[in-house]
Length: 507
Image (cartoon, rainbow, N blue to C red; front, side, top):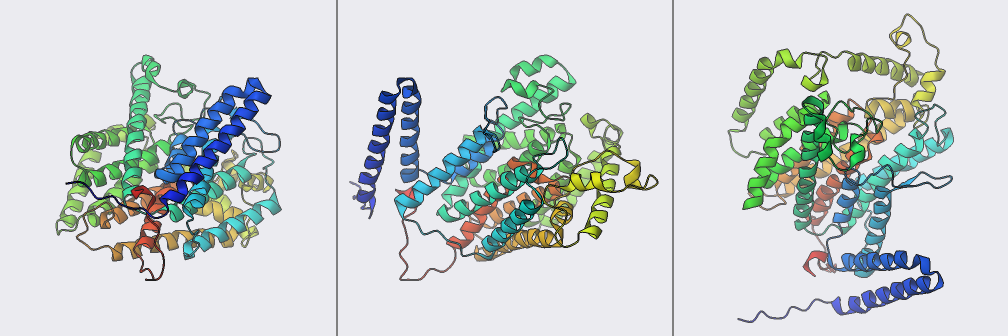
């Protein structure tokens, strides 16, 4: 039987727009090539990229732009590919991808005439936090005076606040289907194979043979001068924490998709989930061990709708207890490769940071000492040689998100940060209650539980370091959060007289 033709209102008016835009860019590229023949290859490449951009904005799932940007920090953040701009921070491949994503979203809004929404309390709270911190850092200075952390104010503000929040806002506005969730999660698992492979190869190179580094790409990862933590399986990053955060999240994404998918890729995800715990251990990040256990309890207790959830939680405690007892001799050492539980240096360092934060808060309780100026203040403080902070003279950056906001932005910044997180969690609760217990699609209560796992993972990591130095982990968290918030919007009652735009993925 012949399938009836489905008429999509508005499609005809988009075709001339797309054609006119492509012709304009083609004419511009040819004009540039004729005026300056040396630029012809670049202009043709720009023509190809522009055509893809237009077509993507019109036909494909534009939410994937956000994930291409985030994952580029774990694959394309090549240190040799930088464009230095006077009076501005260096442009890297991920930053160019971010600009491309912004252009793609702008084209999407123009071509589809979508209404830009700013209708959630969390959006206003995020804007208030951005404005306040921006004013704070503008007053106290965009550059630190301490060598080694000069970029702390502007890098952390732009890279880990402005960019992730902007991507959150755009994803919230372009999200239109639960299918977009599945595509994003599959993309994460595809990158996960690369992250796991690199982690295992680094562990083999550290423990057995250096020859394994010949199998690692890109090659700069093998350079000991690239970043820190060369003695750990840090993946493609300068430190091991982003690798640990991603792998912990990936494990539970796998568990979620294993419930939803069928076929060969489901079997591949089972294998991927089996490989992940060891890869997390190879990172040597103790906070990742804590996060993994915390997330496991959240998943076991809340993602199982039957009465055996508590029995599974008890079994999990038993397994962890037995495994820890059996491996205690290896774990209770100062060697990070075997666990490093007995390494007291990081513990003492955090005690010092806590004492310094309290001293700073007492001096500037309302507005702090300035965003990104924690180290500046520590250097300027008087020290008592008999005190804990006086005995340890090495200055460290803050290793806790909330303590950092308290010291650098005062009680105002801390309250705004907590408010954003509380409103985000409130959105997830609203979505959880709207979804029927028996929903079996991608958009179901287990998806909300997966978000709670991701949130627990991010916040646990944030209690042991300042994630505002890590654009990858912060962007990963806020992009995932946007999916949960826009799904909550999609399930809200709609006015009968309100025109409902056709989802982009159906065209």
